[in-house]
Length: 142
Image 1: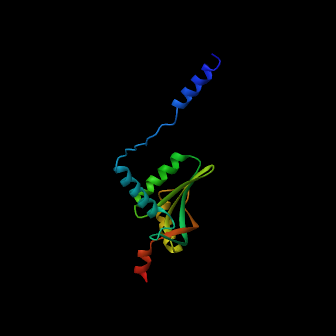
Image 2: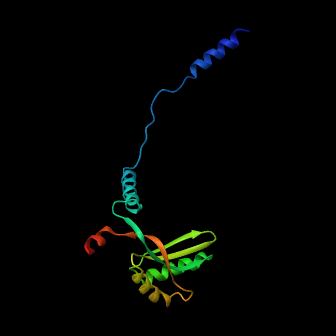
Image 3: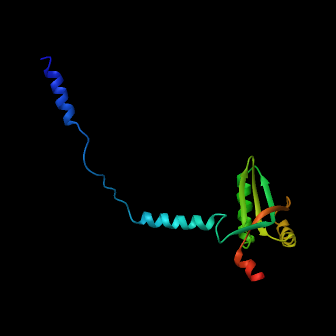
């Protein structure tokens, strides 16, 4: 009896070997299309993209507040009234800041500063910044 239990244990353990076989993965082919599209969007939106270039320039600071709703409202007001300008909003604790535009000359920034002053009575300030420059626009100016 003393030998039966160990033999039974060895027999049972030998039957519990690892499974042999593979794993089949089924996926929707649309996932690959989505991944490819997301990769293209990421390439276009990065600052180091060949279609985007940066240069020193100016942006207009339209609001700096600790109320996120006010910052979103300011950005929406810019989208509605000045669709040609690109607003930038970010959180720099504890403030939400909204800057506008990609101006390479101070005169262009000053012209928009006067126009935006009516929409933002708290003041619109010209800030030195690194701005996005579209290579297509600079080639046509040369």
